[in-house]
Length: 211
Image (tube, rainbow, N blue to C red):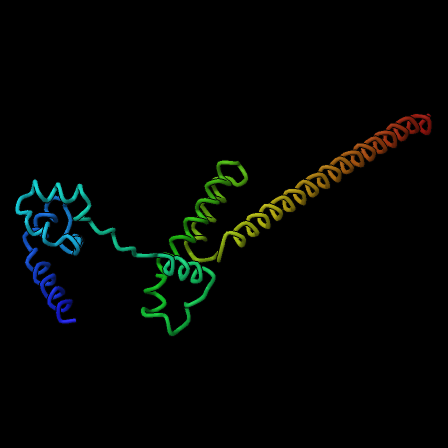
């Protein structure tokens, strides 16, 4: 037991005196000293290596090895992120900033405006609305009239239906006016014809009475 203790102490002394070899190996393998592994069973042979050439030979023989990179797993992070997407871990106890800091009102407003303006532009290019309606709806969108895209689309459909209804009513009124005007003209023509016939009959009867 005493011999084994002495040998272990001797081995530790040798390993502690391998600073030079560890530094040279780190330089040769282009890594940090913590990444250098020296074979403890071959400490005496490694201690004799005092040049880069000798260190390269030991690396080739496998007495000096570059330790593998420590794994920094992101599995737990990915799992937590997926859970957050489903709404977990986002309660009041997990929040640090204010609601406006976490999701700024300005960003929400910008997104809403871009959605509404993109829809108006598409409708104008497709000739679904004219430039006058586009301008009116653009200003109304800026004035916070429409909460979202669905409300704007419903408003457009309602306005177009109302426009068609007014146009139909105007056409009906115009047709009614034309019919009444034509009836009035026909009535006037009949009355004029009656008067003409009556006057002609009177003129025919007047000479007979005188004679």
